[in-house]
Amino acid sequence: MQIVIVDDDLMLLRSLELPLREAGHVVTCFADGESACRHLEDGKRMDALVLDYLLPDTTGADVLKRLVGCIPTGCRVILATGPRERLVPTKLLHVLGVQLVMTKPLDFEQLRAVIECSPTRA
Image (cartoon, rainbow, N blue to C red; front, side):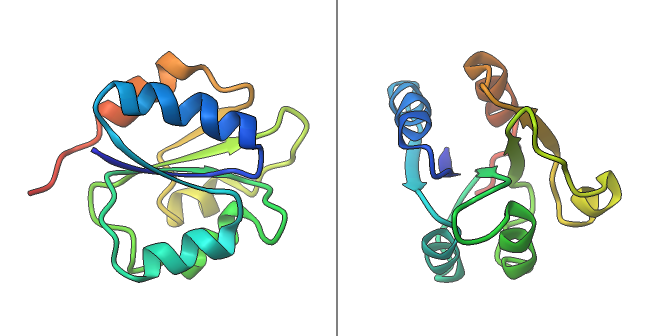
């Protein structure tokens, strides 16, 4: 599977990237929303997107708004949030295509299970 992870916490990026790669996934990481948007607007394939809600340059909601039409059907979108962050309303998250909100610290096994149950496209 092609997995994109967007988070400004470099330790978190590495702690997710390495075991996902070991599980056979192709993982692309970004530390800011702008870089991720440029990458995904170029039509790069992805099966799952793990997106931090608060990034240094934007919010996860703004990234998803910008990527409307770029996120493929069947892509699992997971929003990661800090324990003290106030989230956007659930209705907005649903409209933006978020299937799951996970609070940090992320449970890797739960995240992996959610990612791997994502439908695979041809």
